[in-house]
Length: 100
Image (tube, rainbow, N blue to C red; front, top):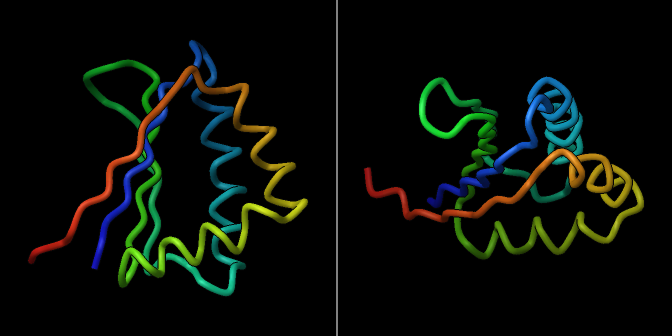
């Protein structure tokens, strides 16, 4: 199983708006033919301010890739993505193999 962490550095003062938008996005992910095994949204308590993490798990890297190819082409996804883009200054992705 793999863990995917998408980390976003939000623009100053945009955390509340970003969390609301990401909750909408989580609903979109849940409607896909290939869905994450689990999903959760995290925000910072310490460290870099205005950090948001979207964490998902998948059975395999192949399942993660299938999910990505299936939803990014939809109009619904494009509309949602246009909403979250302006709320972030940047980000990165981490993918881990779950050992135990």
